[in-house]
Length: 337
Image (cartoon, rainbow, N blue to C red; front, side, top):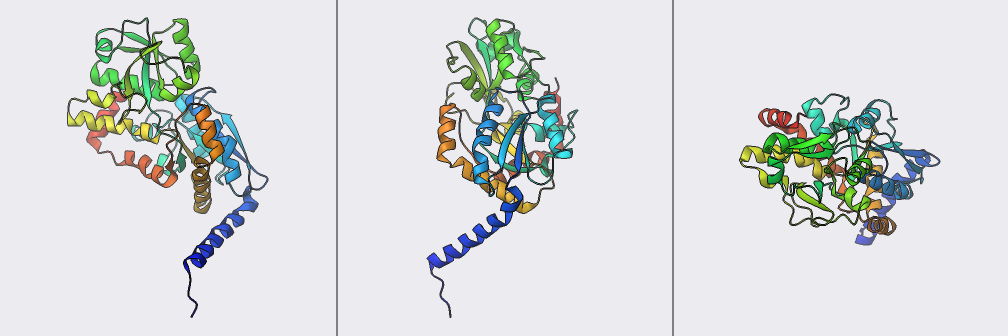
């Protein structure tokens, strides 16, 4: 009788894994994987996506080229709809959209023509915590100030967190954030703050750090609130939106909305991609997150790295589908712009 040693068993499973990878190699070899970015260039999602595109291909068997392409529009719904209905269903197209798309689908937001649970989620690079930042010259410094005085914020797409989170604050807590819409991305929206066209902007903390590293809290800008279930480690003194909840019901509503901050900078491929290819992309993503060269680029760009595997991300996105009807209706009301 053959006795399997621990080393022999490990070698056996390693050979199986290698065989599976080699079986996929003919498919990806010589191909191009398109990485669709549902935002204009320059924002945090664009930065993360381009970092991923630089390193992902070397971890996919066959080493395909990975080419990033911006497809902004309708708060990233344009890219989401493209992935659901136009993009190939073979694993050669990956995308990043607004982390709120699962909730937008649940609420029946206009323009959503995809089923979030049918998308194959590959992995998350980092949670994405948004903030409201206001120019120092504005008299509004705190949420209490914003409840008393109107403050103008530059806005982009209706479906983006840039506009959603301040709107939720207005509808739940009576703040007077006035969104001036029409800017083509967070970079342009932050330029509007610099030019004095508006008093502030709501965007990802990572986007502010990347575009304006000198704009420190209580320096060039004031940050009255961060949209997070848990505070960002770099913003320990900035209150989270959760801290303003006055009842258990308000807390549940905010948890449903701020689920998107945990989804964060998340990537997915099309529905209908063969399961074994989805798994292959997920493991390539995981390997990229551990790649020393990728980590060095993350540090150089001054962004965060807190990855989540595709399987766990799929479950996190699915949680929104399980919202009870009463909470869903309240969320719908506070979401209205």
